[in-house]
Image 1: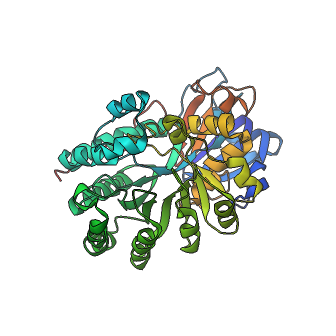
Image 2 (image 1 turned 30 degrees about the horizontal axis):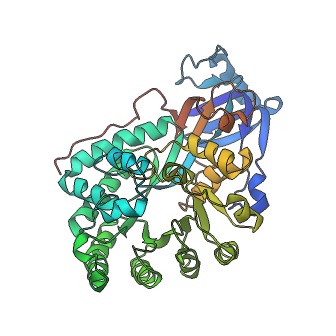
Length: 444
């Protein structure tokens, strides 16, 4: 049995004996222990408390501890002196599109010249641009590129991530993406959830209103049975938005996914009051994501449901859109999570440290609220609240160990600094090292 002790922790953050989804004012409750110890057994949290309560048997490990010299001399030691550092759960990023074939910085320049998201999409850019690139990419090329992105996210403190398809838009392309995600699940130490997002946009051959049902039938009849048979997805998602999928189409697709055992998620209310929030609530969606455009009806529907509102502030930042009304959502009693929306077109970054900072700076979340939304509530937005997102006995030891900081609020305050010293995934430190397992070319 492997045993590991982290001691002299300046503050152990988000310590919870029991966890549950946090709503409204409860999101500001972030229990912490000053001058703490944390015990890990076989990659899971075994115990913690103030240094004054360190059990005698664990004190025997202190002879193996490292001096507090500002760096971990040996991150593989059984005891680590974390003097001056904060320890908190690794980020849980519940909305990404990190499997893609190429970047879209030309569209970034188009935006700077004044073109809107919708105008770029109408010219064949946006999602259709990524779909063309993906069609030309091999599965191995997609896998290796996504693997490098996963390594970067892990070094930035992310321990769990949801990844969507949606750049295939054909039977072959969507299945290729989902098979890449399945390979990532099998080889990465991160916890990964897969979402089928064939309903990201309409392929050009189906773009006319009269042709929409043909693509919907393709998803329902040709994609979903294979996805279910091969176990390629945990969730199903639809971009419910003007010019994309309307409420009736969204409901038809999600109900078909439910019949195949996939729980719904929805891209909702990003550009307009699309009805996506109310549709998600009615269908029992795990989350409705984006929410840049909300009114009292949508907020009320979300507040009265078990559905999580996942906010993606770096997408709003990158697109220069109004930020999500986080304070109004919390005041109404909603449960919210934070995620990166990592994708090549509207949020080309999976840095959850920046997501947390922007949520404080632009959406006026308190540091405690932002950290909860990016850890425990993010875990619940991936059905992982029992396993990740807090310092709780029995949960997986996915942890961030900061550099020495003056306070927890310094994390979002000093948004441009690298404040992470080490990241632990499943009880093993990975920062500045290769991620335990390495990608393998299988010839597929």
